[in-house]
Amino acid sequence: MIDRVHSASPYESRYGFCRALRVGDRIIVAGTAPIEADGTSVAEEAYAQTQRCIAIMLEPLGQLGGAPADVVQTRMFITDPLDADDIGRAHGEARARRGVRRLSTRRDDGRGRRPARPPLACRDGAGGNLRTMSDSPRV
Image (cartoon, rainbow, N blue to C red):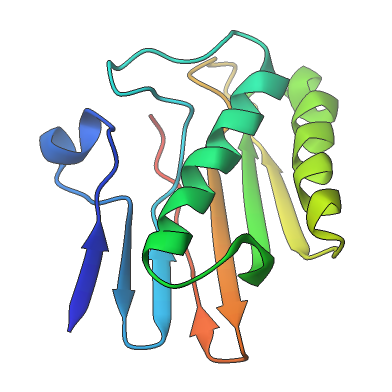
């Protein structure tokens, strides 16, 4: 059985995906960009966008039986290396609130494009059985 969670993203129906799904003991969370229900993004600053991405990613975990403390890995896809410190700071602050350092990977995309920043992905585990993995699409 597959349980799916949809968000307010206007791109889910257009592009044919859901925010997260659970298959057995796995939760898979789609990659995230700071897109609001109306298709707009939050402030231009990478720090605020990262905070929004993290909030979007964590919401479906609870709906599918996981929790923020279950996150064991995140991936940050950064489109402008000049934003790396702000993105890392927001990411680190979110992690520090949970009191545990998890695995994390940062990928800088040197293509020079500046789409909504930064798409994020997470991999979660709870009780040793729940695993979440996400591939982050470019928006």
